[in-house]
Length: 266
Image (cartoon, rainbow, N blue to C red; front, side, top):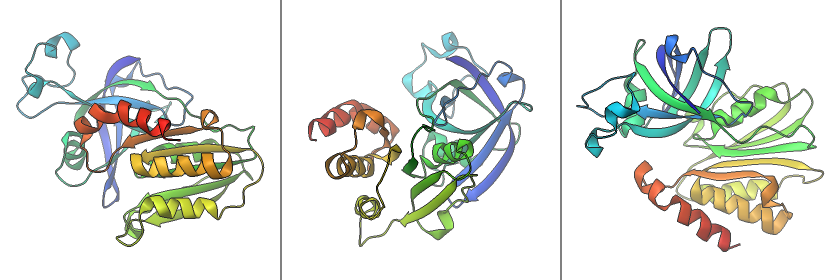
């Protein structure tokens, strides 16, 4: 993976909690995209008061106090424009909260963001009969990028978890896409809504599966698919991006063990 930086060339508010930021500039001259539709970069956010700015060298920050070191966060690349050499990233931003969210909330044209990558692991399997793409706001960029590469007439079911109608996105595709939005509420958990939706699907043929997002929701869907639909976990792209009630650092501390415990429970 390579290290580079992007300069903000455009900012667009997609929903009350999602900001689209387009990066360009000389810092992306060596950017090499992957073929994965869930490709991501490790974005490096500079803390307030840090004695350096973008671009910076790794040796410049390695001996600093931990509070001043750059904070890495993984973000999916929504789109890559090879002619303009622009990288588009959709950020989930809940107000002035967190390093990444706060940066995205206040980003302006000319701002810079250093990043490492990209990397990834999923691209829709065109040999499958149909596709099931499941995720919340954190997974919607990868889902949208996957829809971009699916051919006309291909059956696709998208289950998206968002806060409400104002948070829904337009998901275009040449494929035959059925988008079903699951709105968060106090009466029924998102986990149950997703499982109920999947249980009601017409299930036939070879299905290509992508399930990413909040850990408990991903676990509920995975367990249902394995136990009730006989899905081979190894043949799917299923992984938690975050855990409700945990910040990024807290989730990183427990993620490996959480996944191991979860898999052991099936």
